[in-house]
Image 1 (tube, rainbow, N blue to C red):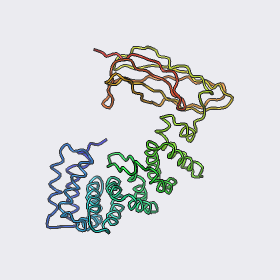
Image 2 (cartoon, one colour):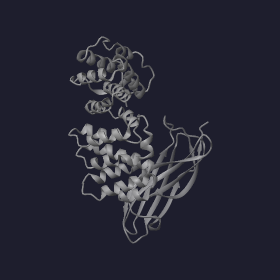
Image 3 (cartoon, rainbow, N blue to C red):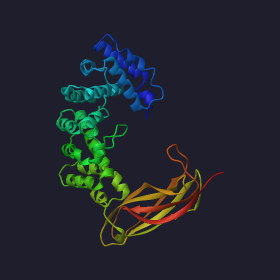
Image 4 (cartoon, rainbow, N blue to C red):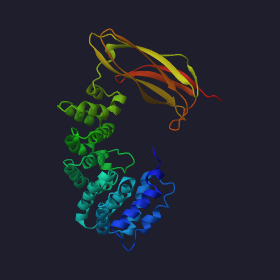
Length: 370
């Protein structure tokens, strides 16, 4: 993935400056924005967007009307596109929510809807949600009927409770049901991009309120939309990994402890050098008189720096077993050091998890190479 300085880069800021100077020349000549290209340094992507947004506000005299007029003029240029758009959405949101003129709030939301097809306005929408949740959700509800899929996506993506890279909206965390109306209107959308946003949004809700998320997915499952099964599978992914029974049922996994015998994991060796692999096999048999459909995961209980174990779930397989049928499974799990995970020597453990139910926990030693 490109780095922050490759996305909101000096070149993109120079491009934004050129668009503004060509479409809305002012006395400031957008000098603060132009100068911000040299001051971003080690800032993260969202920090870069906000810093350039502040420069835009300075050049507009912190006046919403001046900024809004310049933004509308810039929208006449096809060159206003890509990552240069994010800082502009941040400036619009900041100015509109700070304005003493009540009409500027709604005008700012309208500008976000116009800007979002050029990149996305999802991050800037958070300022509006925090300033006036009900008013912003009302605008988002209207966007669900837009002919532009980018605007419809903004209604779902910008209101996600756990939107990555974005400001938190505490009220959505406390009350995730507040956005269900939007998802109800969009879950059968004709756009794959919109439906994926809906699935990610419901997955966010599932992390806050599993019962609310599974109930919503169950209502959609009872509909006739041919796209619903794939959407529900994506939306339920966190709960499936956690072994939530309602989520497993929704995505088509059937079978419980009384239906199965599980052997393993059987380890090839119980001493694993750091950088080596844990190799194991297992056997699962359907001992019931009905077919079962299984989500088979394995859980590695890693030793942390404090000496305690912490579980991490990994996908292993999906299997449909007839009565009496057995499946044999194996996996090699690497302990090669990676940048996102640090391994510590000591007693670890591994176990299978089938349709959310954990089975035999087997210990092994991860041994330092030193």
